[in-house]
Length: 247
Image (cartoon, rainbow, N blue to C red; front, side):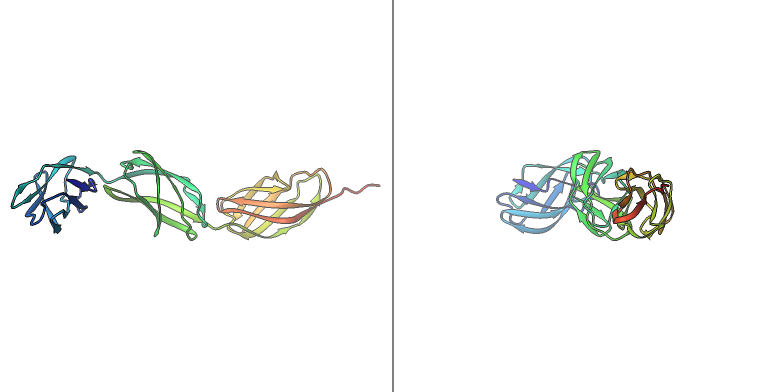
């Protein structure tokens, strides 16, 4: 005989199928000392719902012809999640997060809100998963294993930033010009660059970032790129470095 699946939640409720011969007319299925509910029966199979339990228990089928040899069923505790990293990401998804906890070996799904992703189990204490697409804002994260589903962690989707204006849009090559960047989704700004050179900045609000231009070797227009946890936005030729006057 065989049993599938051969593991399930300590709380019971796992639907298992026991396959074999001469199983017709099954009168009971036992998980250890507990009786399971039979939901379907043919001469070659018995479908039953596991009762609650712990550890490893023998499963037997009783018919008018007697009781079968035992098969092993493994009860698995509900998973526990202790941390998730990173805790934010782009609404388009696609980034990888790591979940740490216990009882993760049998993880089959990770839900970010209503969106489901399939994890890669590293070991019983860790798994990784590619985040599905979502909408801006926090969502609950749940992990489903053979032992059940565990909630309790939060992941925040962040919109990609947009740059609307730079004021002023020009300044000397010596740098030090105070520029106000207005746009959207700027709260989690991580960097602002002028022609690839990082500039010191300060986040004023979700729509305003203040930045001081770095020096530039030559006059001319340069690209300005602002990067947040939600992505990047670039204004091509967004700032002009002006030549110093000469007499």
